[in-house]
Amino acid sequence: MTDPKRALVLHLSNGGEPLVFALAEDAAKDLEARLPELLGDGRVHAPALADGTRVTVNFAHVVTAHLDELPPLARVYGSGQAARHGFA
Image 1 (cartoon, rainbow, N blue to C red):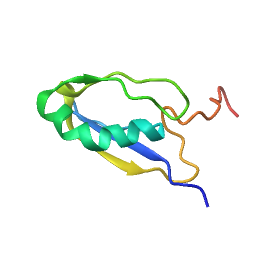
Image 2: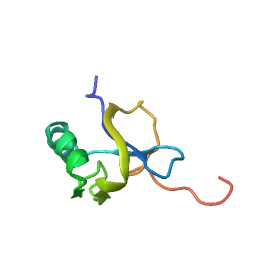
Image 3: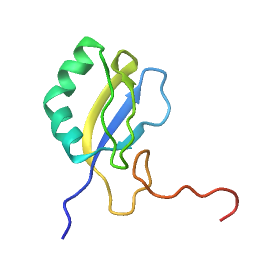
């Protein structure tokens, strides 16, 4: 059985649906310790995503954030799954 993938879930100050990013394993471990500090100070941080890219987050615009496990077939930012275009 594979290890569960970790995700960063962000709830932005302007409302709407939360943003979900699939994290690289090292980034998830790093954020586990640093997330309260990043939120409290409103810092900018660029964690690595599971597909090898990075996302830059300005935590000054984030109301709340948490780490969660991704469901096995979830399609979220940074998950590395091929994008489909049109009516596929």
